Image (tube, rainbow, N blue to C red; front, side, top):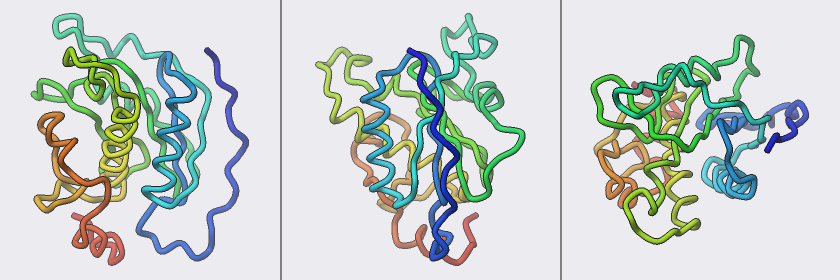
Length: 197
């Protein structure tokens, strides 16, 4: 399923406070349902109050596959989608449906360039089916939006937060389900002040 790239995004609003990106370009990696991507895009528009566009589908980078683990290296996927030239104020979010890992961790839900422009999330472990439970697309979208906001937070310079916050580190799916989908007051203040780390 090849997706048509969107046109060049419009100029960001002049009133933007700097607490959120001007826009997010979602890059589907591998086969993903268009309606699911549109629902995640809609959730990000609401959660972050910014423009969200869908780019053309990219193939899953097979060089990132680690056969000894049966997983894909998240850092290599980030490198594969990282643009050489990018729109100021915009972030690029790769979404894929394969299991990913980073460093010495068993798995990750996502990864981002801290204070950069690129992030990636995997839907694989966000689905009920991964755990042998009945499919729930609404819950999948809610989880995906939380993890996407979390990774976008990292691109804005935020680190993990111990408060009731979307920046809380998800060690398991239970953590993702329990945490809110928004930045806490402390993280919002750090973004507004430009002091994120």
